[in-house]
Image 1: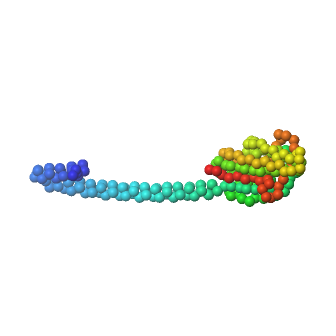
Image 2 (image 1 turned 180 degrees about the vertical axis):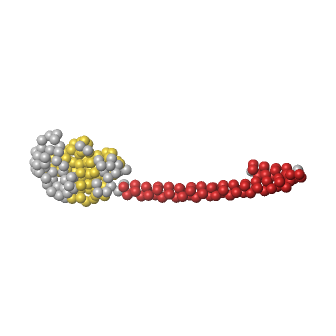
Image 3 (image 1 turned 30 degrees about the vertical axis):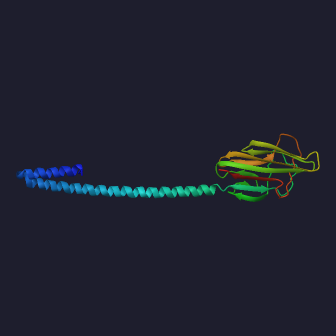
Length: 212
């Protein structure tokens, strides 16, 4: 077995001391002092190694706890969805006026506001939005689905020329950042009576959720 360098030097000093009788006593004293110094250094190194191992264990533990907390927060944040319906008819809406869906059936994450009729993204991500807008009995409704004042899509529910209902529905997928807003408003694209029918049973609704 190979000896550590310092121990090998100490052994060689011992042999050298015994080979020289005239200086044997002083040599032995020096060797003993050297061995004592080596023992102290080894003890110090052991303490440092133990301290490093403890520090590594604490770091691994704290890092694991952080990952677990992060996973829980992500899981909670991903439960974002809303579903709101209109419970009554609204006539003669103004240009760019928002439709306020007043019956909230679901609002996980509290992103939808019945006072503004808009959804505000609580977290960033990919969102899906769906809607149904109804008109009836010689009325029509032309509307935009808007994100931050930019029109995502344009639709028409047109019963202007007959006594019956007209229904339009759609879906969009869009990337949202925290604080981005989406709502449905009256369009200025064409003139119309701008009447929306609501019964509270899904004839006119607005819904959405965080996809990922």
